[in-house]
Length: 67
Image (cartoon, rainbow, N blue to C red; front, side):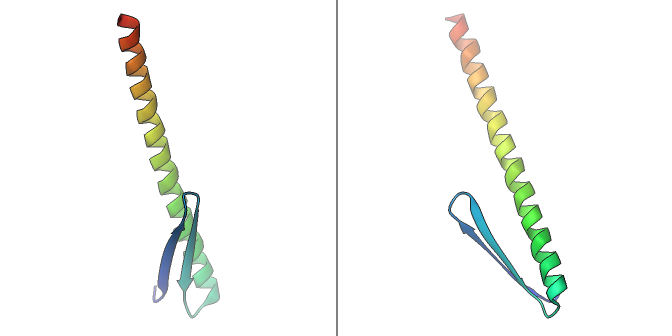
């Protein structure tokens, strides 16, 4: 690659990705790809957390109905 990348998380809903390369087109491509991968990872994590939350609530509902 031959470039330099930085990632800064800004709060809970924003981030900054910077990729420095002698070729501006390559820098844009890499930065955009890194951003896409970061977003995919974050979406996957949120989906997993939502699923776990749903499972917990569902199990609590089952227990409450038995009482």
